[in-house]
Image 1: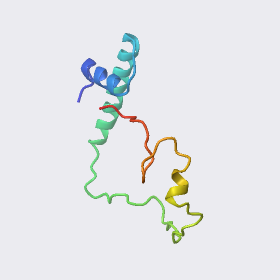
Image 2: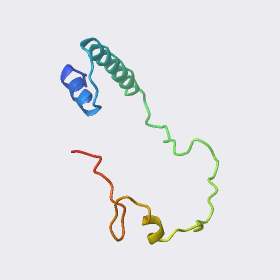
Image 3: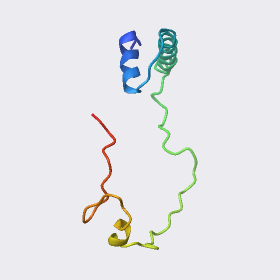
Length: 96
């Protein structure tokens, strides 16, 4: 895979960035260097290597969930600026 100006333009749009021509060229070079480093990993022989599932032998200690200080729905919605009978109403934040 090669990073070209078209891909940089698409990434710029997705990240909502405005890059100068110099910044765009620098990022293109940086991304190509990263891809070259990652492609070196493909040269490794990993046939007899077990996948790493856990980094340590530690076991996570979990506790039982306990409901504490529960607020009923009416009280929770009482100070909401906009609500219906069951939910908070909030402004739309994602435009697709």
